[in-house]
Length: 268
Image 1: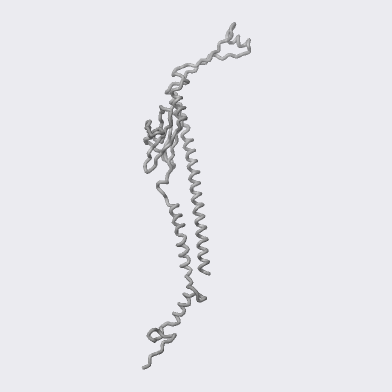
Image 2 (image 1 turned 90 degrees about the vertical axis):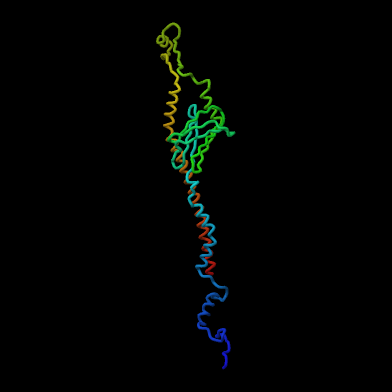
């Protein structure tokens, strides 16, 4: 019995392969049209482009992810209010820090006193020393409000409370309208061409009256201060969102150009 001679169309055991044409077509497809290196399919090229842009996509996702610690900004301010320091504490979403302890320290860390906010987040503190006052309040959830009033401003407030120019309660300020010698006020005024006004007495305000006036002024100016703070916060938020959108747009353009270049290289 003669064995078949192996040839280009026979298999390892001398038998012809079952599908020789199909194997030749598959090999030709992998070698490419010119017989060179295999040409990757279009899907593989797109996958390679996506893999190369993965760090950029991850950075965009992290930038756009909601961060609880940055959800709200702490708003705190202090300003002179007569012989006291008035302040407000709250969050940028409009929620005020009601019934919150506010501790006061000097620049060396020594505690000067404390105050409590009211239902609208406002507080009053009476300074006694002309030094810098640091107001600190813990709003919870990692929000800590801290604001400083410089020593010069505090010194002016302390000077108003104890200064020599402050009139005593019940004092009277009188304007003298005594006419010249030789006649009554109307007669002397008519002769000299001067109109004399009657004596005017002005009583100084008591401490209770001053406190009532200061409270009225504070109540009238509070809405205006809130509107100004909200306006500033709105502009800051718009600037932040605009900057994030600009960065995301640049990443998108770069990803598009990189993917397009990969596709051109794959089809070449």
